[in-house]
Image 1 (cartoon, each protein chain N blue to C red):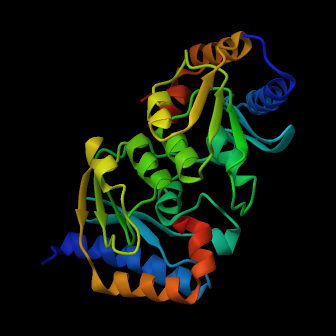
Image 2: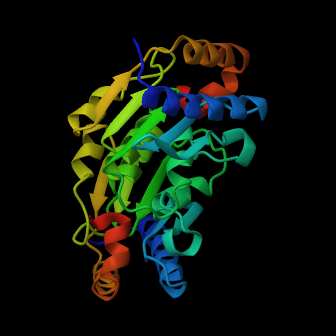
Length: 149
Length: 149
């Protein structure tokens, strides 16, 4: 898939967050929010770093927006397909577009999102697939705790 | 509806959280988690207090559990019917039972929860209906920002 510059920028911001998480010993899932061609917020999974169950990458990026009211023009990027918490949150906040770097290591909520009117694009980004696969192989217990069940 | 002692206890803990929120100038929605007849965690909406968009009552109560792995025997109480973020979170964490104090001031996700196997009971508690109704009338802008659209 050939990506336009805006998509590359949003993806790069999400991947940078995932890498930050990995360097911190955390679960390497990152997310960014773009408005037009600007990254307005980003975040990564904080289970290990803050002992947080709810700060998945997407939640951390949304929380970083503060008390933003309008997500109607915002695109959410995530390095891994959203879990049901994050998918519900995307719908609740009215985020209309989600770019998923990969859904090979986790997925299943794309149809729920689409059924609620969210446009979902899956990039199948090889770097993200490999980063997550490597992490799951190295830390299966953290992965199971976070999302894997 | 005649409530058993365990239900009364869980509801009372959620209502106490909502009242705490109200006293702090926040949005009066509270939640508690019960395991058997013990309240294991509780929390209230933190939009005003912490500038948090994601710490609805239910999210705050779940977050207060720390890195708990198993919600299979937990019941979640909430003073107001869960929004789509909180409903998705309940499903993601595998919480099997939700007791909703009221869904007159907000509702709509009960069927989604049931479709995912969650047992949902709505109490129509007059105290909670009145507390939320009074808050919405007094602070419509905060309510719209939080959940109302």
